[in-house]
Every structure is written in structure tokens, then in C-alpha cells.
Length: 421
Picture 1 (cartoon, rainbow, N blue to C red):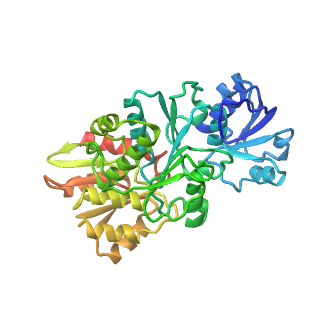
Picture 2 (picture 1 turned 180 degrees about the vertical axis):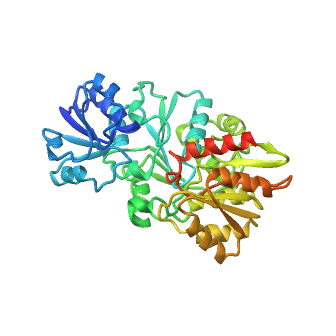
Picture 3 (picture 1 turned 90 degrees about the vertical axis):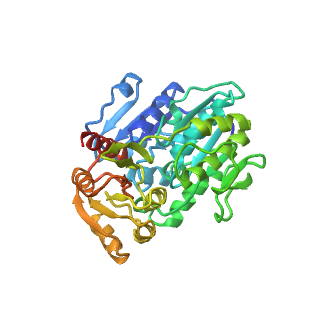
């Protein structure tokens, strides 16, 4: 699919008006489309939407009248597929698009898509740095950063977009095409939303489904067949690189190899790829070095919102004092507990909703732990236990929504607590 053509829509409905939904509604208005935007949050700030002429309906109980005259529904990634208005739209034969589907139709630039359970943001930003170092125009957008629909069209034939893609965004694509598509890994996550691992995996694999014969599909070993017709390239952490990555951890070397292969497919030379690897230090909340206090190192890995991500952190910092816990997403912790034993975790400090489930898994592996209940208590207890040379690692293996706004809020609070020690 080549984007950049007028949509030709008269009226659209946007369901969910948070960051990406708001961006989608504004993008549709710029296309000259009448837009109705709905959200269950009756206190949502909608000034920008009002100014742009979006008809906004807030609150619960919005009925089928919202679909009158609508030609397409754009669903924000945070809105589940079984939302009643979305079900009604599908039953009525209306197309339901994700915000990235809309963005790909509007923008003329080719897209390098990056998905996976872990490492998406780091790999996307690193790939953007590699392309930028080659002298090509590039924008990074998608799941965590700017919405795709917030980007400006760029007619430069050398321009690219690197788009980080979540399973929630990919489940509602239609003609979205990434000529360069990267799947980093797939392990159980978001089962509270997708229901089964198979459904979650299938959503991830949709990144490949519209690829053509000249496109490139970059995948880890063991994935099996993927949709689409792109040229398949397998990678692992042992792949050759023009320079070793500055980021710590074997998992980040895997991310670097995947990004390098994607950059090569875009046309970046080895010198540019190597320069980016040498200078890119990683992102906040991802094995972020916070500082030393009395010889104890504190590391913020708040973005580890599933067991696999926390397992990789334990590999990077064996014999650590690890802070675990938060809100549950349906994943089991048996593998994480086994990894904690294998990496000789000194002690785990458990907090939040997941603490009892984590404790049961750690008991089975004889990994020592204490219940800390909240982050302040966890850091204080770990600091009191630690001696010079120890690492206190926040790598929760869980979402943050039981006690924090998001993983960034959790990581920022960890940083504040450590800085106050």
C-alpha cells in the first residue's frame, strides 16, 4: 500500500480520545472529514478537538447513534475489540482501523515497523539513530512516542518512518504495510486483553501480512512461518556488528543486531550503523543506571512489565537484590522464579497486587524474598540489606497500574527515592 493519497471520507468515528485517538481525530479533520470522537472519560480535556471542529461525546452509555453516517471507525489501541460500539460497527459492516492504519494511509513515507514483546522502543530508537547517522531523513513514531498520525508528510524519496508497533495497534490493521518489518521476540503478555497466547502472537505476526516480494522480514529463530511475501532474515545475539553496542545486556545485543539488519535493508552503510551503536546509550527505565549510594548500584528497569523482560534484566545483573511486583496481566511467574534462582538473586522485594503470586513461585524455587507492599518500603528495605558491590534492581515483571499511572511514573518514583537516600 502506498500512502499519501486523499482518504475521500466524509464522516468518521474515533473511539477513545487519549494520545493516539486525539491525534487520529485531528488527522482526519486535516483531511476534510467530519469526525465524531467518543470516550468514556467524562472529565477528558478536549479543547484541541473542539477547536478543530471534532464533535466530542463523553461518558458511558453512548449508543448506536454515534455510528450514524459513519464510513469508518478508528479504534484507539487502549480500546478492546469487544467494546459495544466497536462490535456494533463490525456487525454493520463498517471497517474498523487502528490509528497506525490511518497514519499509513495518509503518509507517503515508507515504514520500517518494529514489534515484539520486549525491546520495541529501544530497537526503534536505535534504528532511527542508525538511519539518521546515514544522512537520511527519518522520524520515529508509534506505540510509545509520537502517534503515527501526528507526523507530517515528507515527499523526500529518501525519507523513512520507524514505527514501533504493539499488538493492540496491529490487531486492527487492514492494508498497513511495512517494507522493512522486525519481530524481536514473542513471549506471553497482555493475556488479560488477548485471551490466549496464540491470539497475542497472531496479532504480532500481522506486521508481515501485507509485505511484498521485495520487502524484508527480520525474525528471531524458531518463529515458524509468517504471513506476507517478504524476504526472511533470521537473527540472534551472536550476529556480527560493525561496533559493539554501548547498551548493557545480551538482550540489547540482540536488539542491536535486529536494528542493524533493518538499517542495512533501508540502505544505511556500516559506518553509520557503527557510529549509532557506539553512541546510543539506551532509554530511561530500561536498565537505566540511577547511581551509587554507599557503594550500592541502583538500576531502574521499570519498563520490565512482563516476566521475560525481568528475566533478561536478571541475566544482566546476577546476584542482584530485585524489586518485583505490580498489577497482573495473566502471565505465570514460574519461569521468572527459575531464572531468579539461576542468577543467584540475593533477595527479592515483593510489592503490589502480584506479590502473593510471585511469592508462591519463588517459594517453589527456594528464592528468598520479603513482602515490601510498596516501592518506598522495597527500596528502603533493600538499601538496608545491601552492602558495597551489591545491585538493587527495579525490574518488576508486572504492569504498574495498581499503584502508579504507568511504568514511567513508577521508574521516576524509584529514581526520586534513590536520589533521596
